[in-house]
Image 1 (cartoon, rainbow, N blue to C red):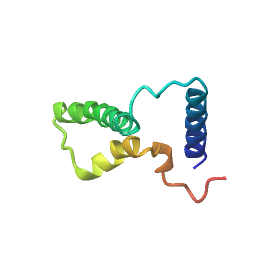
Image 2 (image 1 turned 180 degrees about the horizontal axis):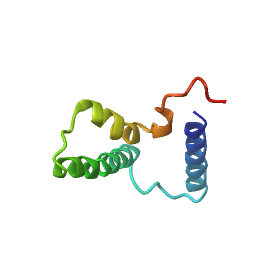
Image 3 (image 1 turned 90 degrees about the horizontal axis):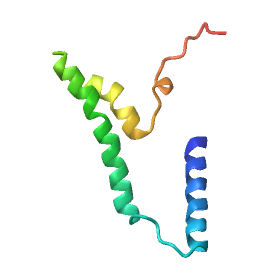
Length: 87
């Protein structure tokens, strides 16, 4: 959650700087967000293609574990089960 708040704060700061300099953002917000989403999805084409070329199946479970976390902004270590006996 802290990462999201920091990201939002930096975005607001950049917006304030743009306003003080009387410049517009490089792209309309919706276009920029769609572009970022496209980048995230495009990055996941490589692991899918590698898996297909290796002859391994691309299952929904694999996709959710390997491709969905980067697209949705969840780090892999957030999904690792915690050991109860870890000190």
